[in-house]
Image (cartoon, rainbow, N blue to C red; front, top):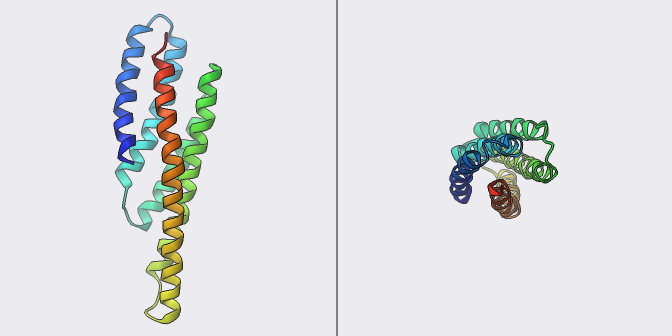
Length: 158
């Protein structure tokens, strides 16, 4: 997800340019700024917490739920930004759910005993973690990257 960090910087720079160029027409620019700011917060949380332990993963899932709700509650009037808003809500909701599922599986794995049934639990947990995070990273990561490019382009237009 390091690609997200790159796009966060690109979006931030582009947003600054948009705000300078469109200072008279603050409606679209301010809506872009609010949406991008929340998206950047969510992406920063993901980057900051990559590879952390179960407790952190559970907290990251909860934090992403808060970001998702904040994005959802934005009062945007621009139809295109509303579309971006709903798509980003889906992205962060999917990531939050995948991280929560992986954290739960990791928690089970940590409590597995050194026995045949414990090894089976461990293998099942490992598969669940891999499935949840790999699927989320592939589909949601691509969608997020695509959305960042689109919103960057849209918010740069006069």
